[in-house]
Image (tube, rainbow, N blue to C red):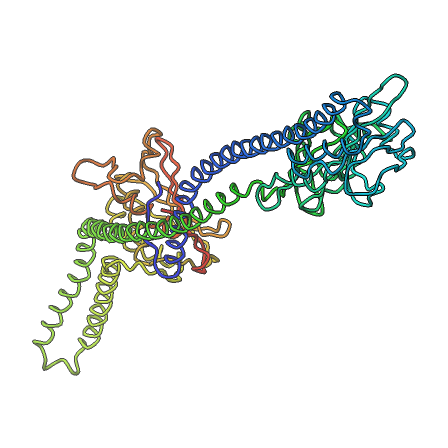
Length: 592
């Protein structure tokens, strides 16, 4: 049993403040836990799905760009093959005819074709149409010439050559009898580069082309990624020379997190202390690689904005929930405090009613106790009255000593009446709940004096064994009187006629223990745990309310102590009341 009790002063403020905090914490946890979990799960799945869609959209854009570039290169190569297959060697070596063909191509495609030339097997350009003076230019030592003579058609890497400016060429090899020659066309780099740079997504998205050596074949609108070779080694098409195995080389690319591996190869790579999304696609049968790169924050900028917007709503919402929870918690605690005050007032009224019942039980014994000394006083007063009738002989007579003896008896018996009424008034005084330092032994002796007449009437002895070295306790004197008076009266009622009550006080740990043992019939085991329940009594109807032990339990628990009972049927019962020692600050605060 743990009855709620009202706390006052600093302890009450601390208790209700703690109750407010605990209630606030519980409500916040109950409110926020599902909110955070649901928001986290929805955010996670939304972000995962959105990231996949963003990446898939980038794949589609980059793949379309790859197809566009490949189509451009294949179409230009087809144009040159068409010229080589449609006209004879003699026609093409005619510079006038060659200039006409160049003009036709430029009319169709703008400035994409810069010039045309016929190069013989010795590497000498024997016919030329263009703005530069490259007739009879010798390309025998050029890298592109050696490669071009080994295949029917050839698309070179970007180089400067005799022009001293970046460009690349398309060659078609033709054979006529023993004669082998090349039809060479120069592709305008600016036109090609603008085609590559058409991919422009966000603020940082850009594309560029590299060969298998990692050399740029087009300009990049932004600074290219570092360690391009490390990324190219991850592709299945780039024939990059490697000193070790592919997995080891792949690790050389800094902080790479692959998203897809195949065609395309894509992922997240750390470059210059920033994370970039990259996508690699093959061009020119794997001799070139189209590289798309974009700052990861730029790629997922929409997600970041959505997250920022969600947090902008979430945190003010959390603050609003917290403020509402705080308001509700305080209101609830105020209602609890008000209910505690009302219950405490009711408890005090019940205690007072119980005290009045105890006073009624004491009334007959007190009346008899006062009647004896009053009768003696009346008798002595009558005797003095008789003596006063003989006033003449009073001064020198032998009755002077008798007068003095009668007066002494009147004072003694009057003192007895005063002591008895003082004890009765002390017990009947209104309960004062304010704790103060008291000596438990003095209180026990006073209560034994009050109950002694009733016990003698029932032929019951009250024996005391009090430890004189007990520390003081902090408690309300009237409430402690109520506790021990109820326990002793219950013991007298349980014994009935003839028996003994033992009252012992002792130290136990940091508290004082009072044992009240009787030689009554004992309490059966099946009701032992119910003796402290309100309105539970074993007395006949009309002789008990069942609130005495319940009130005792509530008073002792309020002090941070405990009250327990041991009983054996046919032997008796023993109640143990434990109360913490002073100071008051050492009292524990009971919980509601």
